[in-house]
Length: 281
Image 1 (cartoon, helix red, strand yellow):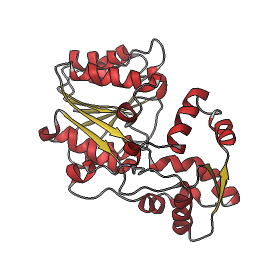
Image 2 (cartoon, rainbow, N blue to C red):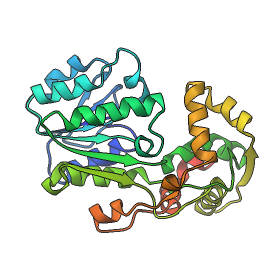
Image 3 (cartoon, rainbow, N blue to C red):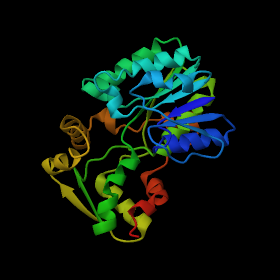
Image 4 (cartoon, helix red, strand yellow):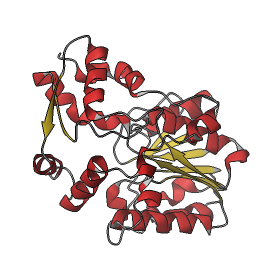
């Protein structure tokens, strides 16, 4: 049995599907009820209460651990999830971390994630750690404005990073869960090319077959919009990366190619697959 947390999100959905298609028994864990592939067991659970995962993890062989931001909040105890996994007999954990652990290690969230990585390394379990950079699916933030006004509004229009398709993260995670050769590996996951917000808008326009205008926001405008859905500190942190990425954050990693024996998918592929999200009804 493989347990997948965050199983109904942009990474968890394709991962659950891939594991089910590979003939694996899968338990999909999410905070809310949602559809899952045929044959997959679905469990509603809150990762901020690790003890509640005990019956889910008992008897499982492997765990894909994806944590939302609130699991790092005071008192949440994400390390306890690894303890519950070990107690339940789990042999292998694949942890979704972040590239920022290596490139910007001193932010509070990244300090917490690095501590979790260290807990996993010292747990006695087999482990793999995935450190993706920016996600192609973050472009869904623009879906409403594209549908309503055919406009993408974003800061730093001509500053790019090699964002990754979440489906590629899922494919790497599946490989790590199923293949012993990846045990003890840390993979940095990026897309195949540096791409700017302005270029992403062009790719969305091409996928739709209709024009999309790019409107560049100031940093203050972007922070005001982002602060509606995340803490102001995290908004500032994100804007620091988007506006002034380090050389390590613009580097195209070879790790997707190394694990999957194929190049990562470009943003244009993601836009084509998700064009319906940006199309007017």
